[in-house]
Length: 282
Length: 263
Image: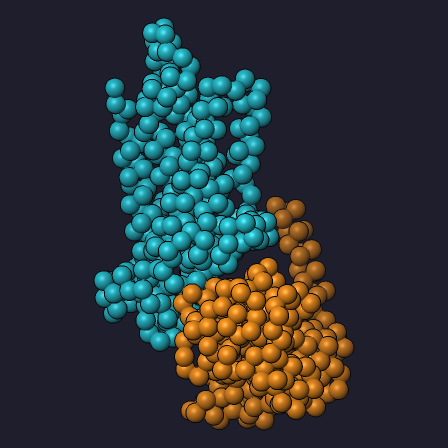
């Protein structure tokens, strides 16, 4: 009895320590970053296009746009692929094949991001340079690497939500004479919509937050990008790149970028919760 | 419980066995450009003097190294630039010279640029190799991240207060710069001469090709000092280590690693 209670309090303590570290990290990032945002001015920090810490300019617009390009590209490439895999494993594949494909996709999540970056650097970049032009390291390279990295998230959550569509929907559609594809496209996907949206938002969060693989393949140029073949810097890659030597205002500015990232990620996970909770229409 | 005590005793025993070195060690801190060389020297020194106290080598950057030497938190500071006004009051010891090489893809037709041309390229005003007499190929400028000692040296030696173009690719290590330049026929970058290898091609500057000889004679323009900094006269292990670094065998090691000896 006493033992039960001790274990219960221990578990409670552990649960709170996780929450506590989240609170501490949040406080720390804001404490380090906010003073600089106030000093520079929020508008000039977010919409300034010149980042040159040694000269006192701290504008992160090109990084925000870089993050947007890379993330949007990763979703454009990764979402159709991931949802297609989910449809295949949930609806078409014989059980034996599903049992083989699923763990393989999940294995992708276990590969360290530096390996993705290295493969991107040595395999992808020279080919982009040779066949598509540009310098090689580019927003496109980042998007392609991230598209593969977000696959496990998209596939597993989409597949679960497709499997969760009640059997009656399927039977009803087929009984009305719909083909299997019509059933999937017109009935099952709309019914699984909120789960698929959640998977997309979580994938987006992963893509925005990824650092190591991105640093290695995007080239980290600070000019505003006008083509996917141009090099970009993302919010995370800039922090990772400059962290080692940054001091004073430069260091605070990197934390301020962390504040911006924090706000974006929070907004994403709140919207993922809202979307996930909303019942499917029809 | 008894097992735990036994393991603890075993650990204590093992820790005790490791302690062949006596006395207080010294710390070197500062320039990340000097750090790997100092680390290697410390390793060799300790191998030759097994009884000596430990020599710890840390990074942090030249400015941090100067501060550490001034405050005494490190016995020896390391810097890859000469001290600025107001940073005096430290004994500076030149241990070697490092040259910065401007590197391009091996297929590049050019073999020589002027300082002015390098500056124009890195400022983003010359954008195609054809305007320098090379093949018709857009130039990809590759630079190091802000704060890096090599970038600091490059800006000081070449840029004359101008800024490196925002379109330049930024990489956070010499290795990464080399990978990008080796993989892009239009690329240009810079790194320490000591770590240039056959995957990239170093260019001559103002008609002088970088080599041990042209750096020693200072005929090659892009050279920076590697300094040890001490407060007052070095003593004890610090003095012995500095003497070792300046000795023929210490200088030999630095030369083998691609630096240019000063003794």
